[in-house]
Image 1 (cartoon, rainbow, N blue to C red):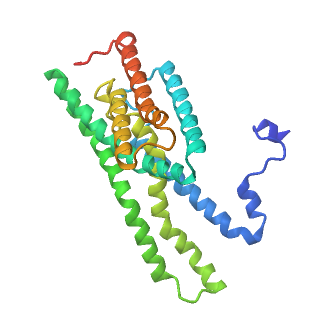
Image 2: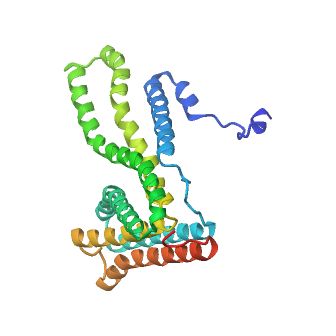
Image 3: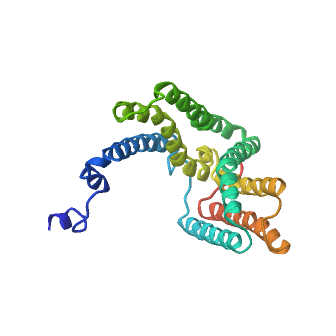
Length: 278
């Protein structure tokens, strides 16, 4: 009864408690607890730097629902094409391309679109936009620095482990060096968790530049997907499958994102009284 009152199902036990009940798995319990604390701290910092709903972002729930549905359909179609005509390595290559290219293209597109909107804005509006540029500049620099630190901290942790760990490892040395090794890798995983939690809100909200102009996230997304499609096409060619279907797959994604972006801008103009130069 107490478990039902607290909102838990009868008989449900936390995984950490199960691990702690098995003495031989103490190392896994410590690793899980350290990883949880590191992830929690990184998530708190990421949400502070790139909040899910930053100031100036006008959210339209109808548009969000359609965008989510479009994303799931695109994911299903990509998976289906890879399953029919591609393979595991093709899917892995596409995932790596999106992981490394998408944030940088989104950032470049957001800055470029913000610069165009700043140039087109009225003179009195530019003063306010400058202050918004300055407030968004520090989180953007921090995000870029986090990506730079990933390989640096990885190499540093490997070098520190090589210097710390003895050549002959025994049970006693493992026990004594387990916690120091976890501490060595904690900064690396903190950066990885930070990028994981920050990338979604940052890309979705144009790296907190949405306060500059209400249409900026939609325009930046539009530019980013077209650039990403052209870069992927130039670097790896068409995806596997019949040529006509492959061309439709390459152009269909950016075209659908563009249509949704302009629909979002249309709703902003008519329902939220958005003006291009205001």
